[in-house]
Length: 225
Length: 279
Image 1 (cartoon, rainbow over the protein chains, first blue to last red):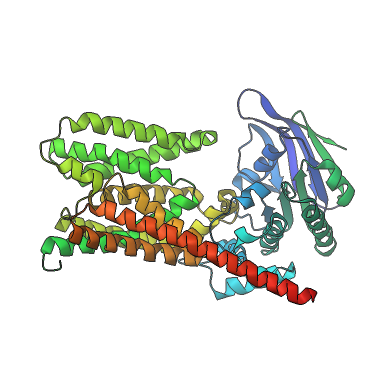
Image 2: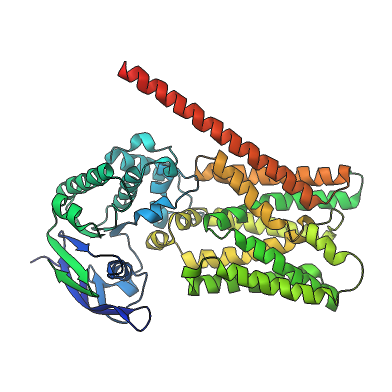
């Protein structure tokens, strides 16, 4: 029996008095994939922020690879692809190669500036996802779909054991959405990682993405569907 | 103009601040807190007035008030993230209110007024030392946190997962923003310093195509705007802050035009390539 990549137990969270998450419990074994659906305000983004240690739970426990999230210092084993509205807000001039090289921060010493080695790795990372020609192109000039591919390439650069994707298809055109989900299916076949995808686009993901577990956030609780 | 000692001091301070201010500007623009410089420069007037009333160095008063204001803005932004720039508006209002009351008690002369629009003859030997120290500190800290600042600009949450000490870097740059604005207000003018914080960076958004270029372009233009503003101020006997902003605004317009032309040229080249492939 494989160990758990993610273990959430008796999780409770509220911003004010009204609870956002109530008694959320689930386990995700290593190398398995899970999609969490939920409408706006269902608490799925809050759950993700708790898993990523951005918020602190009122009660309950979250463990990633057996490690308490609140005590987790090194997140090298977790690749994270933020929401499209986050990537779209990167409006300043920064090339795709710089975006990828920046993920090597934890390995840099002294002045912590990415050097030749980091840029070579970044180019390989972009090439792996068919993005080599965009290495020197400003990130903000790419389409939403390409930006998400770059962010996947960034998340995968450090060879993570788990890939977390937050609403990766929101706000991009239909063609790009399908292309992105195909890319994710390919990645799943090639890389035996633990995958967690959070989305509100139930039908699209249901039809196109091959995931081991499907769950939905309803009234602050997680229910398998 | 080099024959006068005060002008040599002014140009030296200008040289230092011309490179220092855009480094802070890049951080506030990328953090989407551009108006913070405006709030701090206005509240610095309260510190200046305190210095003039109680007889201590007005720049020290400005630094003290700016530090308190900057951390108050950051604390409110952290506590109420959903209200955007409300914290900036609140702190600016309090600072201006305090400055307007305190201005009634400042000694006569045009000292407080000179802080509003800047003064070409205001740089003292102490200001020269302060600007050199600030230049060295800001340059070192910017280089030291160069990578971390890039990660935070992309996404603070992603930066935290990458191992970047987000809160440390934010706090260090909040303090440096406050000190830079307070020290620059005397020469550039409290009402105009935020423009010099933002406009060179705004030009670089049009001109640069990478994060590294953004730094180089912002610093170069900051220096050009500052030094040409001071030179114009000397020859045409106008306020230095106003001269700098006028030149910076022209720079911004030219940058926008250049970016527009470059975009059209790129699209034309692309269309030619597509046509060639289809034929």
